[in-house]
Length: 234
Image (cartoon, rainbow, N blue to C red; front, side, top):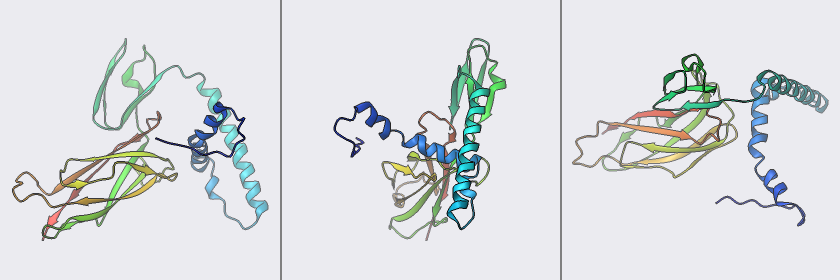
């Protein structure tokens, strides 16, 4: 359950309180767009006047882009379908298509020829661990630092994007947190505990797969993260 505290007057309408409480994502998305598109985080200077001028230009530029985008795209009449992992088959009245992991259909309508509408999901959830080459020492469990970062697909360019992440694995002797939260920079860090396989386990081949899924709040623009970690023993 999520709760919020407010210092608003008692006569404030519930609808107003809810609007303010749930505006955080829109504000964070605004900062993200301004950083990526119009250079909000690229100012270098020493005076307040220079910073103020930079912010004014950023606001005007962002307003211009928003109005042009609204004018060019018009009314949203289609639906979005994304496949962050796995595979899916999509059909409409005129065609069908098989979507693979990392692909999506953007703003499709019932009569569109679907193969022409396939595009890539633009962002990806990247995972890495420290240490990168873990070693089991006897029967002792290992505590590893697991890092998350949303990046532009095919690059290491970070993307500012908060959200919740669900983590799962194919290994039975692994302790992972129930929930993970990315900060406003699209980053997170957690600790996982990995125990050696049971002595009678003949199926473990030394590799553990970590699969992360992000709650995307309807945006469908982040591919799932997948990390395979090779463990050795002394």
